[in-house]
Image (spheres, rainbow, N blue to C red):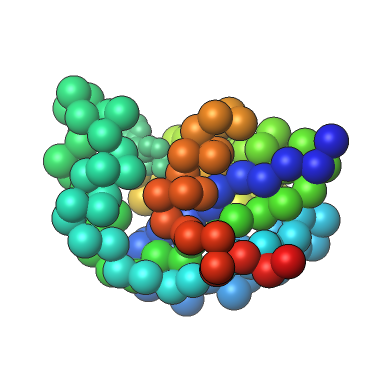
Length: 139
Ligand code: CMP
């Protein structure tokens, strides 16, 4: 079944010049971009996006990292897109990510892990709507 998922190419990967290669990996995997933009998250935007992690010890650092430079946010579509994109990213901790996954190729550690992807259909919808309006989609 075709579904959509939300993707972020994080500040570490954009700053290192890896956004193009990551987009290539995503499209080579058969996922299609339905919307995409470069933006620099505000403090409030990053705090809201990661509100679910507010009580975690790494929350402050996570918000600081995500606002440290531009990111590429996107909406990916395809059969089983949520799980397929998660497989392509590899595990959250880049040091455990196999070669051939995005984090294995371009991530450094658990925080500087190159990309984000939604973990379930409900969060995918919320995350897409957090960054995109209807007018910004292809179709
Ligand atoms: P992401 O998929 O964007 O969702 C939450 C992010 O928090 C995660 O990727 C990591 O970048 C970060 N994160 C998760 N666990 C830790 C941790 N233990 N220490 C630092 N950052 C973390």
